[in-house]
Image (cartoon, rainbow, N blue to C red; front, top):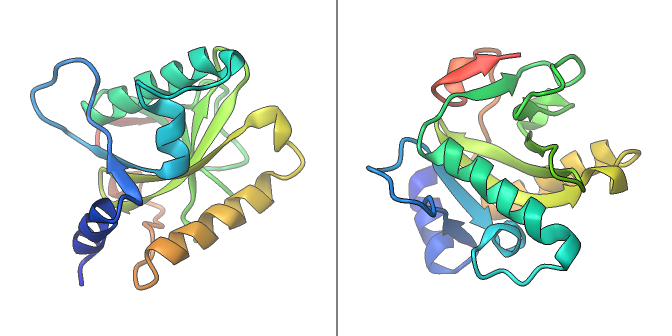
Length: 172
């Protein structure tokens, strides 16, 4: 079974949800599939605590930018990237987990996920950045465990070539 077939199965089982941009688009350049955890953060009808409402919509805005193919900043080195980096590999790199970094408004968030194939991001879980400062690595490992649960026969993309992750990026 291909990874796309597995994604389709998970969609039917309502374990993953394809996110289409909220504002009109001419087709998706890239895809984001969100877990139940992530969809509860970014869905337009999500009922979030007031302190998370703005950052939830900001996260959705970043997701929409990704799906319509806008240029995204990408950090290949988990330990040496620019502050404004939007998407970054996390350490240990060999696990294949990425972080979409929501820095404004506060609280800052990290959406952990991985690339199923070029331009196809699977959002697995999200956490407030200040709550995981000393547990970041454990959250990366937990994300990989969730990936392995969803995709037991497929590995996420792991490459030293940024072009294998997603198109229209700018390395920082």
